[in-house]
Length: 103
Image (cartoon, rainbow, N blue to C red; front, side, top):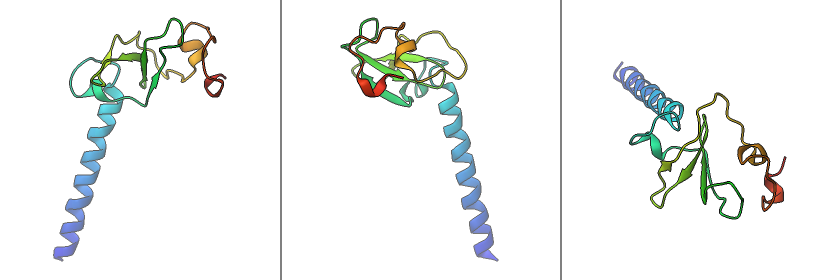
């Protein structure tokens, strides 16, 4: 019987942890505060792309610039289901965009 209660507690802790992490992903890019300004899907050096920040960080809602500490700064407008599409993310400019990122 003790093992069943231990498994129940472990599963409850894992579910609670996953809910917290889901909120981090949902809030990242939508609000600018600690710790959600440290959550992003991809960080890339986009310094060679015109009209792009030197470091770009893609979140669920928008694209943000990144600072030296890895924090989201200068986030764009929030839009649902923000696509990972560098051509459209940076104003239709494909100059200096690596071929692997072009759609």
